[in-house]
Length: 464
Ligand code: ADQ
Image (cartoon, rainbow, N blue to C red; front, side):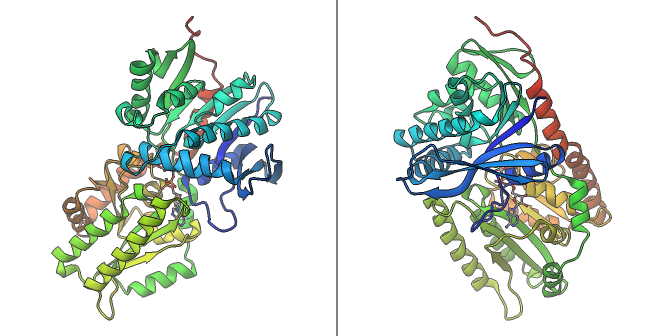
């Protein structure tokens, strides 16, 4: 029997200390629970450098899923996770080259850890198994597995955007990185522009050749590329959205009939929070008639708190939230509520359901699951309005949202007003269109399509 082996940086949705509020964890866990399989990744623990690899792998069962985890030592963690993955790849892939740094030693550390993953993984993988690797932490894993003799079919799904070649080439190790990436058999992207950017680089910089149906021939190998927009489990989310709970009741009571604008994000500079705060400030300044009639709740759970750029954005937002409230608040009205914590999904969904506006305005986002969750949570008879960044992958499917440019403060303030004043018929019409799109690209479809394509043998023989 051929099993599915999943590999990602982290495995468990919740760990001690910081909760992993990422979409990857939510998506993959939901998907694996249905079919069972093995999932390997970093435990989230860092051990001192005197503990030298290979570090032991721990097995844990969670229903039909076997979870395998391994610690990292400090030096590996610093170079791989804090360094190349989150200090170089994340900003560049989100079009924030100015926030990126590069160090060859960190790139070497990134490759070394991809190699440690491969070492730990090999004993867990039988020759007929297929391996599904997730995201930007493990772009060099197929290369490392191949170097150790693995002949399995290995696929990568990239959860984040893929940058245009000119941007990617800011990374001094771009050629090494891409040479490693083409060792995969299948690479999945969230949107067609992401896939196209990857294919452009392969054709222009590596002498690759594009064939039918996303197949690329390069350096004697043939790899398939495809678009697999990640989705949500709408049935489950709708059931959760319809439930009441103590935090939801408390929120509703405290609003006393005021309209709620709501945003939920990991605290990340790619999510466009300062720009969003400023747009809301502008909306308040331009629309005194809405004072006391609206509140904006921004839920932002801290993540990657040991990376400097994340400490800086957190400080900036604390200052801005205080300043905006200082400017507009009344004794009985706080226009902006800023919460640095996470909520269980069963509490989050009814909050979305009670929000007249879902404000989802990342500067760049692979997909953005919050947008889809917000659509799923709405009551179709009286739905709220989604204000969505054009630069979220989700905008390609949810084009019936009010689409905004997150750098356009004025445009976002206008969209907020339009959303708050939108007539019921238009809200219903837009929601119905978004709901259909959201349901079509469900989480199940995402997983099934990727797994099916991964199991398919290469369409064409490799070129000599
Ligand atoms: P993320 O950047 O983490 O994911 P997103 O897609 O929005 O972004 O997923 C976040 C998930 O975490 C959502 O399910 C959301 O409900 C939850 N979440 C966020 N903040 C929370 C909070 N304060 N409390 C509770 N839950 C919270 C990456 C990519 C995305 C891509 C996903 C999946 O950056 O573009 O959509 O992977 O592929």
